[in-house]
Image (tube, rainbow, N blue to C red):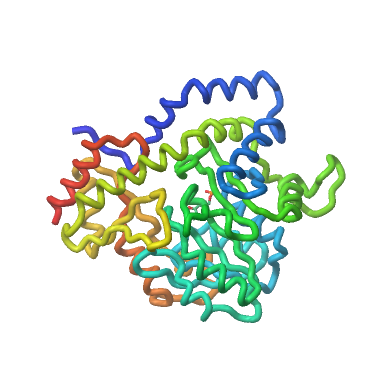
Length: 367
Ligand SMILES: *Cc1c(COP(=O)(O)O)cnc(C)c1O
């Protein structure tokens, strides 16, 4: 019996092999590798896809969030509200600018930050909120934008998992003041290495980020601010342009796979399947189920040749790196319960119907 990996990029990559090789050859022959035409082209294309005026390509998703906060002048002593169940990169970016991440519990059903809990966490030090469109589902941006307006806070969307998702028809990564996304290879839009971007509609923020990612220089050898080297190189930018053309089709396939899982796993054991907010769409970066016997189910699947992952086993507030914030077990019960009960099933564009069925049957047999 063939084993089923958690993620297989091969079907996508086989489809675009010749275009990828062609793009590489163009960069190779141009002998221009950093800050060139491929980056410029991809930035235009991604801004158009994301329905924002600007997109600035950078080194990775964590750097994108860091630069977004930095450009908004979030700094020492400020507080930034983040979900308690996010990937560690979200609070790390807050720490990088010297601010304090303030965790807020998600909605128990959608796993996205709960607007009702945001308002309770706002203090005089709060500067920004980072809604994370978790697993690929858009957050309740209607309520979150209302809160931001009421308390005069910045919004920095973490769109690393949700390229192309929408809330009330508006695409994620186009709501906030400056939004970060990741093109890590396993993301819905993935480079063949590390990459990321910031999206914004604000010209001055776009200019500032473009400067900060390149040593703090707008003009070569003229340094206006203490910036960084956080650039996106020509080879990766070219690859991303090729992949972006296929993203909508690949997202459709992800949704189709999720529909098949939903159908096959309904009313199986105590499984909780993904629930979508009435105004949101989900692009299924991850297909996550919940069960009280998560570890047993994961072992059963593994013994049958099926790989799964846990996103994420330890919430940020329980990480050693954040011990100094003084949280303990049971500080954020919803995030902790999710960490204990969640299981991500294999999903990738090009996955076959028989693979989906075999996984579903294996889960049914466990219960
Ligand atoms: C992947 C990810 C990031 C970080 O992206 P990198 O490119 O790996 O630095 C940030 N936030 C979330 C929610 C992610 O899933």
